[in-house]
Image (cartoon, rainbow, N blue to C red; front, side, top):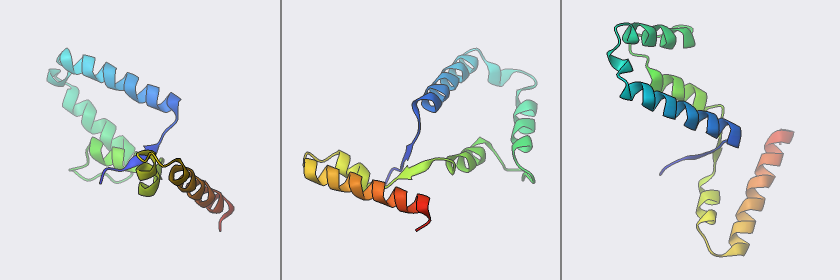
Length: 105
């Protein structure tokens, strides 16, 4: 099942903007530039304290993903429901869990 995460609008806009810039660079052939792979490797290695040879951007993404709150499956399922009472109940349960976590309960 696909996972969903909570992200604020500013961060989403930043990600979408950066995606468009990257698409433009790739369309211009940036991946064929002589220093591309060297800079890519240096960037990846600078992210990890002890990088392995096979570290890549996917590994950075997995680390950064931990900074975002995963939205529970039952809340996502409730969003697809037309039963407003069910949606409200799932939302309340979700909020209560978040409050308890914040309080350390």
